[in-house]
Amino acid sequence: MKILIADDHRLIVEAVAEKLAELGPGVCFVQALSVQELLDGIGADLDLAIIDLGMPGARGLDHVAQVRRLRPDLPIVVLSGHEDPAVMRAAFDAGASGFIPKAYSPEVMLSAVQLVLSGGTYVPPMMMNPSALPAPPPPLVYGGGTRSLAQLRNVLTERQFEVLSLLTEGQPNKQIGRNLGISEGTVKIHLAAIFRVLKVRNRTEAVVAVRELSNA
Image (cartoon, rainbow, N blue to C red; front, side, top):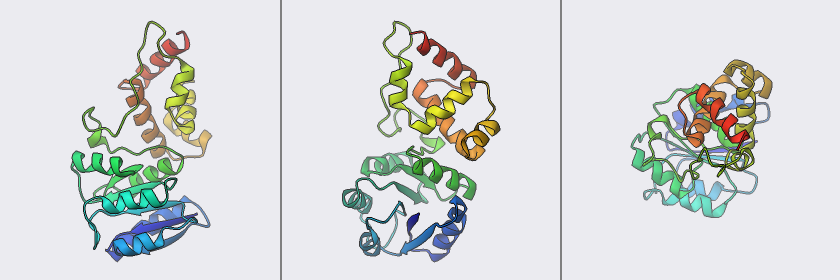
């Protein structure tokens, strides 16, 4: 796996690389200290790009959008000191699959990156507000049979659906993580996304919602 880290602070690049090395053996990193180096480093062999917003040569979020145009299939994670939900929303609109404030812990960053690499989207908790969320799927409607479990499968990622299936079996987060080979932190991130899609607040309400969909 090859990951590009674009940030003009070498200490941050080194710290991020050190933590993401825990993704597994064979992970290698390339760095970009400016927007030009970022764009020059976007190649077909990249598996992930982690991009800072305040790099030399940056004009707003143009460099994120440029990377998205160059590699439409490349997962992009924005790592930034900004914690403004409006900035986060703009990053998602520009093509990011995740936004991690630099104030967050290395463990959260690792879990968020794992989520993005599995095909999911990492949304910071501070964005968990309907007006700030990045292009959410249409809300599920219970009662009247207008939605089904099959349709829910199309809304969630494959990994999120696996987590949901084990949740409905009554498994705790730690056991779900063991069964799927992911960290407990990643399980929690998946659950947050699942709760948002189902419009529920906790595990119990999620199980009830799935039962209603199964009977729809």
